[in-house]
Length: 266
Image (cartoon, rainbow, N blue to C red):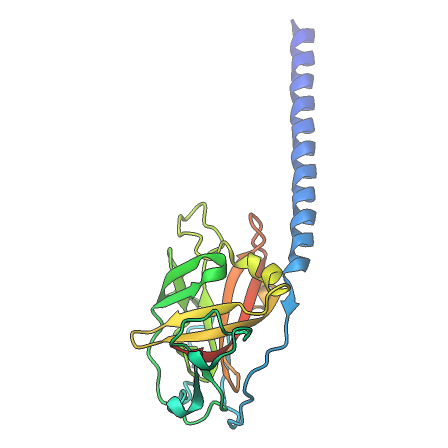
């Protein structure tokens, strides 16, 4: 009996070791496959858009997890001055890059100057990937020795220290790729499709609405960075919107950034 028990024990250890080896090989293969996927998420196009002659605006860079005693300077927000700076959608040619936008869309044809205050974002839409979500400002939560922004739950979260739609500077928006454990939704689960679409179609637009109007941003670049390198750069001499989600699926060790510039409103 002792011999039989010894053989069984040996077989059990052998099976466990084999299973561990298979799991390790699977995880290694998954990591290599996912890391290879990330290379395809970097893309960029050249936009044909009005150049800004606005004097440089002083903004700060803030860490995604700021210390509690960090002070974020809020500079005056600028926005488009009047309808004289706009071109009606009905004036576009059929082959125009912006012809698929709503008929009441107005394209900015002048530099971004003399812009008044804007309203907070309440909705974001990217029709090419089926994104249609509410937007809410994220609050800072106290972690004791530090602080962090709360995670968006089934919505897109806007960093309130960044500019509102139409404001000169970078406006930051965060959403989950997936959330199996916390069940906080997957509002940005199709965002990794943007780089591939951008390589074939430059007319990809982010529609960000307030309670008064919708601001249209054209996507011009996507970039993948390690999560440790993510900082909220608020500085830009034109209105921009940056969308952020975790990649790749199941691993989440990097961040996908989708950059877009304001081109008009409706």
